[in-house]
Length: 383
Image (cartoon, rainbow, N blue to C red; front, top):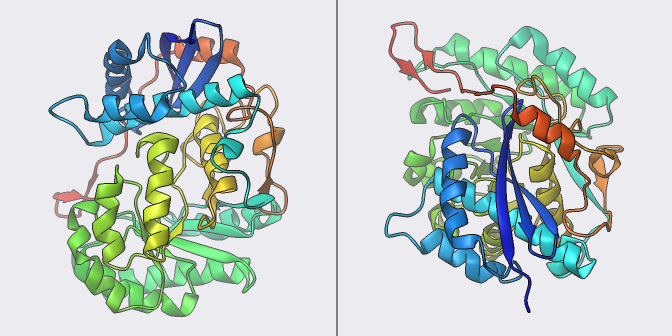
């Protein structure tokens, strides 16, 4: 008799992570991460509802179950449902690898590289700290970093605001040198006219890419932005399916950044990667999240030819209460050396979690929320 999913549990733990644990009737346990920053309690409820479909299902029929979880409701799509599906999907791949005694990257076709390059986030909202953060990242061996371009910015930014953003980027470029890389995140907080001007001013800094220059609702503006710069444009952390990625790829976006905890997990991200490859675009998954999400990203990175670099959250300022490696019994698989994480071959996602610590952390009251910003005149400002 085929094994079946017997139980699905969720754990909401500091700093802002939502873990999904799936156990089969035969006692195989898989873990996934369904974190949706600021909305994880809502996602937790969605996972509980999806469990009504998943419990009793053959855990090896991942694609079939993915279709049912994603499309089995008349009302579908969006970050809450996609994040819930993502956590379940990651856990199913973890189970499949453990049942077969193989790492997920082998199940995806085998490794195409021996190590994955990683980058860290160094801030940028606070100008005084950006040099220190970049120097610390360099000292820790990272060869690439990402910074926010600006704090809250006026809809028609002043010349002073523009030049200050360029000056901060130049400071980081000085620290990283020409042999290091700097990605610059607009975070959707820069208006379209300001983004056009600022991208042009930043060209001489030589960014690896500029991320989310406009909010995803304004993806129709990408053709204009792409046409007016030689800097690679990246986006995708707030896109949740290959259908949502298709228009931005047609617009000429160079780097896609699906989040494996938001965009349907491993199953959908591989399809997004293939779609990107057909458009000449590269894959750099978004992941300022926890260890399970990072492990899933790395498994995809090891097996995906157009993958270029992986975000990771060690020492990120959001990690209050726990850091990236704290919930692991053995942190070595996710530890970088010379700015890379080496291929490893443990079954499934390949990490050993401290389940007792996770269960304890879930008992602590926790509710992370993103900030809500205002412009000087009191009107809403994009974060």
